[in-house]
Picture (cartoon, rainbow, N blue to C red):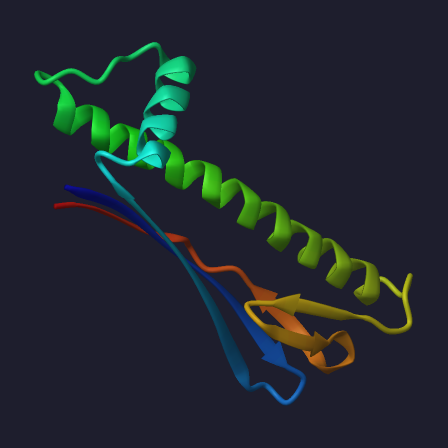
Length: 128
């Protein structure tokens, strides 16, 4: 059996001409139930919460553990987006005369941006 977590992040950049540019980034992780990586995830989650994976609570445990894994992945992405926002604010306040941001494989010149929007993160958990 495989368990998967899919996260979709986005950043909408508004060009100074008013054109909106959508930059999406997806992270997918899949674990096979009998793999060493899965067992490490179970161990980490058990240590964090004190819950153990048993036959009676396997489905609930797996769902909560995958949400836990997704939260860890999302934390890293949140830090990246916060650094981008800080860089943009620094530029807007005149504390920098030039700069760029890099996100989802794109490099964007801050001089060309009039706004940044961070939409909600989408999470999908699959087991099967």
